[in-house]
Every structure is written in C-alpha cells, then in structure tokens.
Length: 219
Image (cartoon, rainbow, N blue to C red; front, side, top):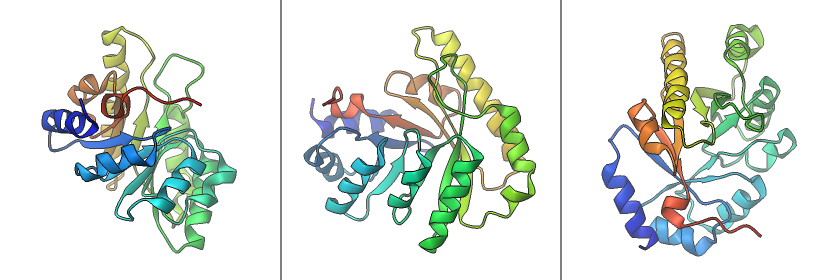
C-alpha cells in the first residue's frame, strides 16, 4: 500500500477526538510530501537537526512536533517554529524552552513526559516530580511555555494487559491534573504497535510512523 493509502486507512478508523502525528523521522522529504499531498499536516521528528532541515525545505503550513528525547542545548534551533514539544522530561528543559521561546516572542506548547514503562531506558518524570513542578512558584512564573498535557510510552512488550494498565494509569493522572489545569487537553499515548489500545484508554494524540511510511531507514 502507498503512504496515501496507509494514511487513509488509519485516519478512517480514528475518532474525531484523536489527532494523528505522522512520525517522519529518518524518512526522506519525498515521503513527507506524499503524506502532505494526501492531506497530512502534523509530522513528528525525534532529532532537532533533521527536523530543522525538513522545516527549511517543506511547506510552511506543516505543524512540526518534537517527539524524541530533548537535549536542552538544542532547543534554540527549533524555538522559532516548533508547534508542540512532546518529551519534556525535566523542569530544567521546560525553563530552557521558555527562555528560547521568549527570544522569538512565542509561546510554545509542551507536554510533560511521564514515565509509565518498566524499562530503564525510557525517559520521563514520575507523578511526584510532576506534582511538585506544578506547585512551584517558578513554574507559575513561566510566560513563554504552555503545558497542555502529558505524553507517555508504554513498555515494549506483547502483553496487552500491561500496556493497557500503563495507559490507563496515565489517563487517570491526566484527568486528575485536568481538574486543576484548564489548559490540559492532550494525552499523547499510542504508537504504531499499540495506538488502538491507547485510543480505547483515552488517547487524544497518537504518534504513528511505520504503519504510514513503512519500516524506518537507519543509516
């Protein structure tokens, strides 16, 4: 199936409440254009340098989402255009985004990444760390970032019950925070292998790459 057909198949199965982020990391500009011509406008990248290069050459109505682990010293390269940053996994990173956004007179939307997986390799804050950030005066003083929800990655496992439990736990926490944060609207959970479970558990944004573009190209 073509990229356009894959997009159509996935989009036709999604509830209207769910946004599809087409994960275009490692994919050539030609593949992104094919998805763009099929109507896709939201793309996700996990390396800032690659996203900047694509931003420079592709149509400017594309919304670029940074979905990978974020190195603070590279925030400045995307602060002038990034639409949403998914993987904010420390308060220091959020403060850096605020600082760089201010230079461009922008307010950048962000999601806090919560660690829900059992693997040690996955990044993210735990619930206690997040709650202390929200209560801090320093957080309330940030003017150029807008935290609008949470992101999580389930454990890499075939155990659907475990995946479901991890997503459900994050959704419960998201709902709890939503009562205190009126800006909260995005729960970014679900990728190619588990997005259907994520949607059943309350996802409002899924990050899908290989099911659209085929397997990744690693150099």
